Length: 133
Image (tube, rainbow, N blue to C red; front, side):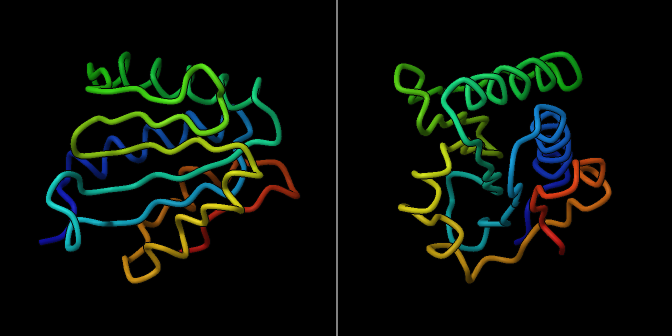
């Protein structure tokens, strides 16, 4: 069963918020066929801890304001190297570039179909990679 409409809507809001804070390499994967605990992973990265925190704050703020949802769980705040926001249907991974490269979540979940985001994150400045699906 593919990701729910609710999960896709939350993903679009979170991706737009991350793009607004200049998150890099924003990718969403429909993991619903492989996991029962969530439908979508949204993965993005930033070059420093401060920007990771800014992206996380923006995602939380926009999901709270536009969808009236708060994360069920938030992990990784202290170090701000890999912050995970769990919204049930959506899990947002905001990683420092080094953690993104080392853990390579996209590679681990490569069998999962991408969720198209090009219309949501198309306003990113040049030089910032975006999901092309």
